[in-house]
Figure: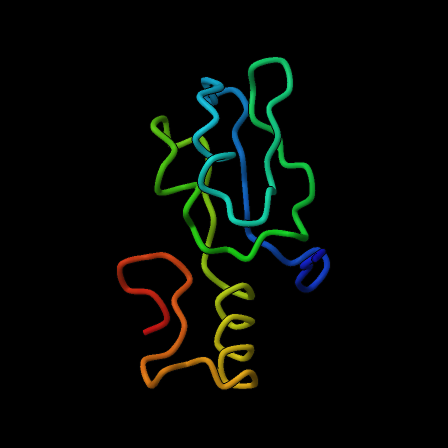
Amino acid sequence: MDLKYLKGVAALKLDTDKCIGCGMCLNVCPHAVFSLIESKAHITDIDHCMECGACAMNCPVSAISVRKGVGCAYAVLMSILSGNNNGDGPCCGGPDCCG
């Protein structure tokens, strides 16, 4: 399934100068937003980003930043619409996830 969110709104930033090419972002990203090209991470399709923050939390050199936003809003809405909230709501990744 090709999950894309609102086009051009993800607050994902990658500093390739800081990147050490460890590939952790590729391992933790649930939507395959990153690829490794010539030993550096690159954002392949920012519109796949759900802004969960897993990449930024797991980057050992803080080369990635992401502000929770549209991705979390999407997760909340989809949880409500699908009835899969189990009474405690969805979670997008962080320790203070979704309130």
